[in-house]
Image (spheres, rainbow, N blue to C red):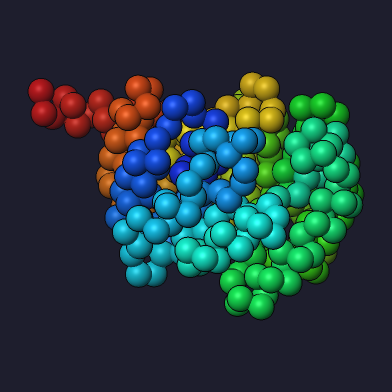
Length: 301
């Protein structure tokens, strides 16, 4: 493999549990990321602000960002109302979110896994009619905050169902970041028996510091699409202690160092992450960003 695609989820998954983040800060982050060479940015989420206030005013965000040609700007749309709002502001792609854990599904969206998938049928139909591609997320693929280990067969079942419903890509998410390389590889191999490898993406959280190792293990299976968040922002607001997505800077550094082209300018990516972190009064958790910023501070000093 000599090329990989990175789906930048910082503006959505990264910022959805950052208290006090403003619309202006979110727009600035998307615009900065648009200048890095990234080809896909999940810019927001059309969910009720009652549940995720940080993602409020997604329609304004999509109306005000400076869209760059060749970049897909997508959004999470859990229901038909969300999809209709997203279509009204011309999103390039949408995503629906299922879980491999019954407990997580019940606590997250108050319904069973089967019911959640059934709810996506009208969303899929309307998106198909509007000719907008739909991505499918499967959360808790390597563990659940309520159930612990998850049966691989359940992950396969949910991923296969989403693919058969018409999702062009299935992103397998380790929501609480408990996965290790052997388990991650075994899970992906099982899903790949039912869903083409070319239609699979991986979304690792770095809660236990395993995200890059998991990516490396799964590269061997032919996976070429990975989700990550600039500066290592965010996590899952429904899973206690599950903070920290895989940092985009760390992923780009590793892949490029292996001779795998990402098309992303690392310098521009680090600066985009540093900018939003300054706005939020926090430091990037990306090791690569920390090293890069320290090195350039020394040069300037």
